[in-house]
Image (cartoon, rainbow, N blue to C red):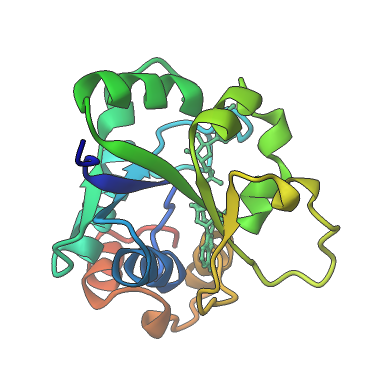
Length: 196
Ligand SMILES: Nc1ncnc2c1ncn2[C@@H]1O[C@H](COP(=O)(O)OP(=O)(O)OP(=O)(O)O)[C@@H](O)[C@H]1O
Ligand SMILES: O=C(O)c1ccc[n+]([C@@H]2O[C@H](COP(=O)([O-])O)[C@@H](O)[C@H]2O)c1
């Protein structure tokens, strides 16, 4: 039997999306066995406070702008109508129901793999879904035991030392960080006066 479409699910808060995220999504869409990468904007990460977050629809708009010229990358608002905080295992169950026959896997930076053991039903996630992990630059990082798990695949992607936190702080400090965001995202953020 022919296997279904292979889709990499790249979950994130994306507050805002930056070229580090886009670079990874594009790398996996071009250089792995995935047909598409879906960037899933999470309204509320169960392990984070919601108060510093830009509204969901603004974060979605920025991801849509970022991927518009990349046919194999999609922005997804599937979590907007699911109960919050958003437990990934619930979203995966919903996607399986909506897209029978698709083969899903997860994409995440090593920082997220390091805290995967705190996620709801993480053992089930690890059993059912291949996880594509790429390194994040952090000299203080401790070794991550789950890197040895047979369903965890380390991707040799070119990485950028960039975070949304750094971007938000830099905008607030009046710094010019234009090259760190896709041009359309920077324009949107600037016009809307976000993070200032
Ligand atoms: N520079 C980067 N390059 C590649 N992946 C990244 C980068 N920054 C974050 N990621 C990954 O993208 C996913 C979503 O991350 P998230 O939206 O939290 O970005 P962030 O930049 O780490 O945000 P924040 O600084 O607000 O915590 C996570 O799997 C994270 O590991
Ligand atoms: O399911 C969980 O228990 C769980 C715990 C922490 C984080 N997550 C998800 O991990 C994704 C990455 O979050 P973030 O904030 O690091 O971009 C996001 O989709 C969260 O909902 C999921």
